[in-house]
Image (tube, rainbow, N blue to C red; front, side, top):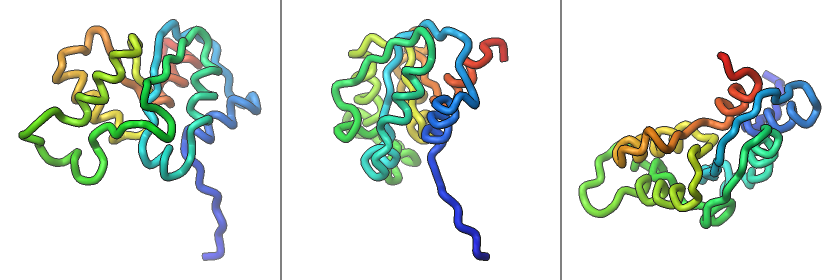
Amino acid sequence: MGANFEVVHHTELIADLLKEGVISTTENINSVITYHDPCYLGRYNGVYEAPRNILHAISDTKLKEMERSRSNSFCCGGGGIHMWFEQQIGTKINEIRTEEVLKTNANTVITSCPYCLQMLEEAIQRKELQDTLKVNDIAELVQQSINKTT
């Protein structure tokens, strides 16, 4: 059809919009957060800085990196077909990753992949941590920092 589109991930778009002043964060998010690097976004596409630039732009957040992050990140457990079958033997990958989240003492884990979001939510519920640990997509956190009331 002759169209030529540049495709960017939503973290890259949001980071650019923040940098250009098109959107700005106005509300403080008083939270200790950690960021889970999605495998495909990070290792396959090399997108590491855009999400962190967003997190640094949000007032009153304290980013605590996990030991395994960036190109050394650990899978959420949703890769391949793992999201769709029940593992019967051993510890689930998403539970291992949640343990790594807990080591940061963060009260919120941020990601930018719907599979990672689902897998981390599942592990948090299974471990009954819903009262002390939340998981959000980075876009949700940006939305909260723009207007906490919506």
